[in-house]
Length: 156
Image (cartoon, rainbow, N blue to C red):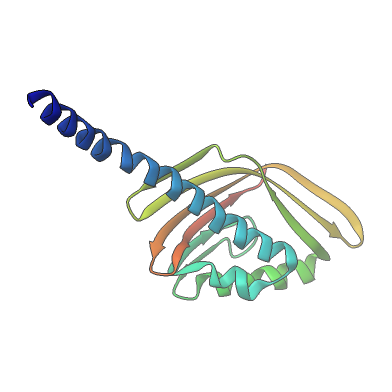
C-alpha cells in the first residue's frame, strides 16, 4: 500500500515538474511562428499584415531615418517611413531571410528573440544583399497570440 502511494505521489510530482517545460517549448515555437508570419507578410509586400503583427504601443529602432519610432502607431509609422525611404533610395523587392535564432527566451507572457538576417533587394534595378545583419525582437502574448512589442535592426 505504501509503495502505491509513493508511486502515485512521484508520478504527480513528475507531471507537475515536466509539464511547464513542454509549455515553454510550445511557446518558443509559437513565438517563432509569429515572427515568421510577420516576415512572410513583409516579403509579400503586405504591410497591413506586417503592421497587424505589432502590439500597441511598440518601439522600433532601425538603420534608416528617423531611426526610432514609438507609441501606438509605431509600426504603421515605421512602414510609412520605410516606404518613403525606399522610394527615395530606389529600393524595391525587399526580402528578409531569417537565420536560425541565436536566442529565443520566453518568460511568461514576454519573449526575447535574436536572429541573424539577410536583406536582399534591388536598388535602382541592381540586386543588392546585406548579409550578417541582426534582428532583435521583443514580443508579448495577447489574447490573439504573440505580438511584436518592439524590434531593433542592426545592419552589418
